[in-house]
Image 1 (cartoon, rainbow, N blue to C red):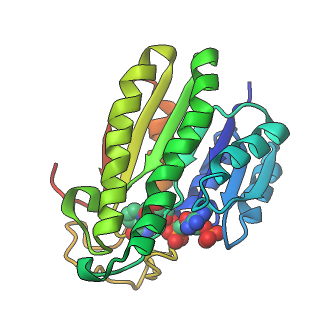
Image 2: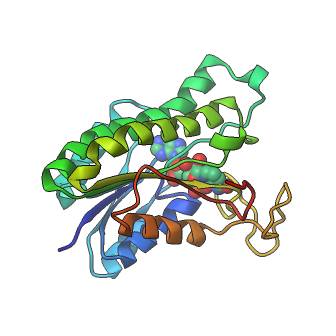
Length: 240
Ligand SMILES: NC(=O)c1ccc[n+]([C@@H]2O[C@H](COP(=O)([O-])OP(=O)(O)OC[C@H]3O[C@@H](n4cnc5c(N)ncnc54)[C@H](OP(=O)(O)O)[C@@H]3O)[C@@H](O)[C@H]2O)c1
């Protein structure tokens, strides 16, 4: 039986890698994007023999999550897997963060993942199978370098996960977070994978690759016994 995956941020560096791996796994993929097209992921899914659609959704708009889920379900059927990967990083010192920037960051990085989860979880519970994966960040633990708004939004995903996961675990639904650090060839951190150097010392001695995030995400989605966990994929940056 083919399952349906809804992936946000499918136009980004990590999202494109994730979208391809979801298609490789046999999922039909709804690839969501905002300013840059995600058709490459959708067409890759179709080339693998599955179904793939690209749907635009500006997740800073609180009405977008419901519309996005409705569009995915109208084309592909009920959503079995939600990968909430879209994120915005407005680099700012804490003194310079105004309310507009704070609210815009929280809207995309935290409110949208909650609203998307609220839309898809009831069906997952009814069908006794589902996966929710939030893409957070090591910044949720360390504070990071982007800003207070970004760190708070990513830490918020961990709290959201801790609330939701035990409430749906017995219904076959897992809720987890993947927390990357310094992943290159993304718009957020556009360092070249071969020649880019990390801005801080990383034990493995290089920046991370989108494919490595996608590999971990797929493992987490496969594993029904893994829930309520944050998995950091950071080259050993943060011991935990
Ligand atoms: N790269 C890193 O080092 C790193 C480290 C830790 C965590 N992360 C997290 O990993 C996730 C993926 O980021 P990335 O590294 O792949 O960066 P990226 O290449 O900049 O991708 C970000 C994605 O988020 C989407 N997005 C941004 N604002 C949006 C909005 N208002 N509505 C809908 N979608 C929106 C972008 O869509 P459009 O381009 O179409 O606008 C893009 O697809 C993010 O949650 C990020 O916080 C990344």
